[in-house]
Length: 84
Image (cartoon, rainbow, N blue to C red; front, side, top):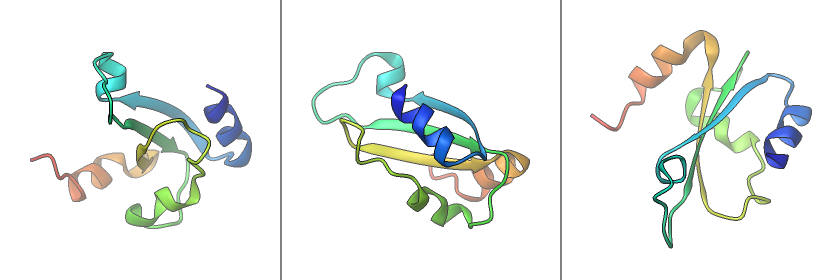
């Protein structure tokens, strides 16, 4: 929660923070990472470069970060869907 609050202060374009995967299901184990979704009101960087702007070092576990622009979420997901 503290990380999300600080991220919102540093990035006013941040609208939502969510987590999913094993931590959200409460079945994480040794070696699990934290899957985090950030939704932005605006984004100028290409999808593939957006995660680099976020400081994740203060989080206690490795993080897989997905940063989506609200106005193009469906396009971003479709263009970079590796779960098919």
